[in-house]
Length: 228
Image (cartoon, one colour):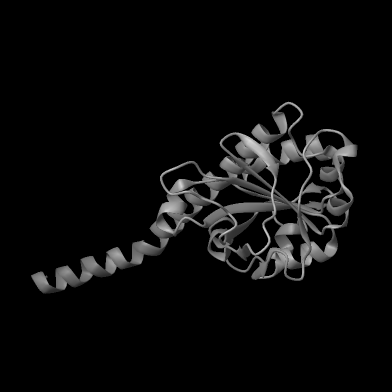
């Protein structure tokens, strides 16, 4: 075999491996996101008197968690995050659906600490927005800063009327925050990395897709605090 042919064969072999390598890398990143989301939710809910009111979690259709991650902030301009959303089904909570958020309201600070975000989708209309490829908080879907505290009385009139409740945690402080103008996008590449091609987001949130092994801690936490 000539040297030129050997080079061509080698290049073709490398090219054939690239999709598999990329897929493995995407899957690893996606599962890291699931683990970080579980950690963030657990830390928030275990903070004394500073978690999300349990009655709101019991009513929520979906919960989205976007862990603050400075590697995304540095690479993508400081106003970007990646996370997951899980939705209530007749059999508990769904497998994670992968999302991304971007916008000036997020408040990532390059060189400083990052911000964890939590979104509660309170009704079917809010869930419909979540299933879109992209939507803006506050535009078509009413969003409000969520109340903080264990008691049901922590819920205010505005939070009860909102379709989406939003929270942030930065520098250890957890509070409701108005994220109007923030864009929520679907992350199809991460969905494909975990579930393979052909799986729709509707199938994921309706419970038709098996939950990845690494997501079970978050599902358990959601069950504990939501009563389902």
